[in-house]
Image (tube, rainbow, N blue to C red):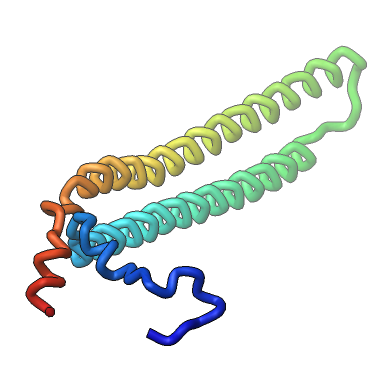
Length: 153
């Protein structure tokens, strides 16, 4: 063996040293299949989240349209100012209706967002549990590298 000044152990053959260790066999196909399932799960979760965001945006658009219609309706039905008491009562009733509608819409959006999050995370949680069970199958019995080395020599 030629002397290499950058290699500090010229007489040591690391392949022989490493052949004395028993390394576990790794089922590469199982690992790749598991990772493909992970990608599929994340894709599915992302799709669910995207669809949920689309539904929320659609619902917000409907809420805005309804709010504009309500505001237009209020201005059309507005009467000439009457007594101070009538104006205050009418204004309070109108404000109460608008407030209750906004509050209901907020709860509706919150519910939609919660359901979307639950669906997406449910897919990921299920996949994490499955993948942790799959890890057990990645490794077989330790491969005897010394037997392989001996057979190769």
